[in-house]
Length: 186
Ligand SMILES: N[C@@H](CCC(=O)N[C@@H](CS)C(=O)NCC(=O)O)C(=O)O
Image 1: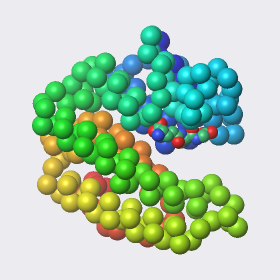
Image 2: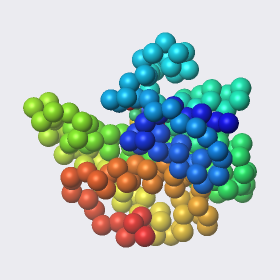
Image 3: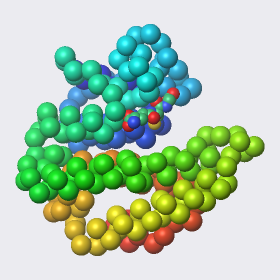
Image 4: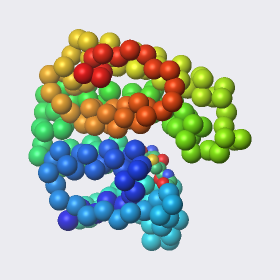
C-alpha cells in the first residue's frame, strides 16, 4: 500500500492525491506539514532532507518532489492513462509539466505567500504586482495552446492537466487581476 506524507492544503500534495485518484491506486495518508508539523522530525528528514511535503513510499521506492512523484506513479500504474503512450503526446505533457513549475507556479507562489501566508506588515506589494503580471502572461500562453488543442498533451487528458489544474485552482483563489482565459477555464 502506498503511503503519502502531506497535508491536504498543500498544492503539491494535491497533485499527488489527484494522480492517485485518477489511477485508482489505494493509499494511506499521514497528515504532515504546516500547522500539523512532523516534517522536521528525524524520521521524516531521513525520507526528505528538505523537510517538505509531499513524500511517498511505494514498496522499495521512497521519494519527494511532487512532479517527479506524479510522473513516477503515472508510469508505474495503469500505463497510458495519465502518461501518454504516444511519444508526441508524452513530449507535450512533459513540456507543460515543466513549464507549469518554472513559468507559472513560481509566480503563483510569490502571490500566495504575500497575499495569504505572510502577516500584512511583511507583505511586498511590488513583488505581488510583478508576480501577477508574470502569472497573467503565463495564463495567456496556456490559454493560447488550449485554443488549438483539447488538452495540454493534445487529444487526451494527461498528468499535464493535473499539475496545471492544481496551480490554476490556487491562482483562481487569489485576490489579483486575472486575464480572460476562456479555453483554460473551459
Ligand atoms: N518542489 C517541491 C516543493 C514542496 C513544497 O514546497 N512543499 C510545501 C507545501 S506546498 C511544504 O512542505 N511546506 C512546508 C510545510 O508544509 O510545513 C515539490 O514540488 O514537492
